[in-house]
Image (cartoon, rainbow, N blue to C red):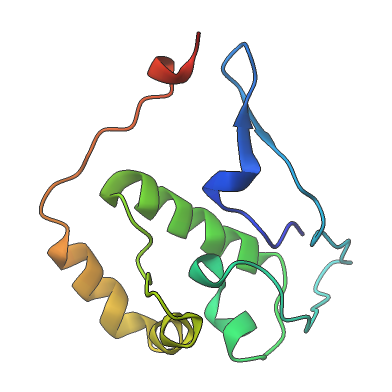
Length: 117
């Protein structure tokens, strides 16, 4: 599992493909195996990581959802200036995720083509 998906760890090739970089937190897991390491970027951590309940590959799927939300809305759904506030929001996801989507009044289109030379 990757465990540190965020825009800063995505690079574009000259042909326009996205490549993932920085595998410092990556870990090989067997099928149905969990890990309890508290690591990653606060805005992209799944609730099971924050609550130390053990996490598996599904934590990466959570990070993909947060990344897609950030690309559409312009900021992560659980953004706070203090990490502890971010963790508190993530541990009560059902409330804040719904409010975050309701507050998104304008969605900015995101195109990779303008980033290419």
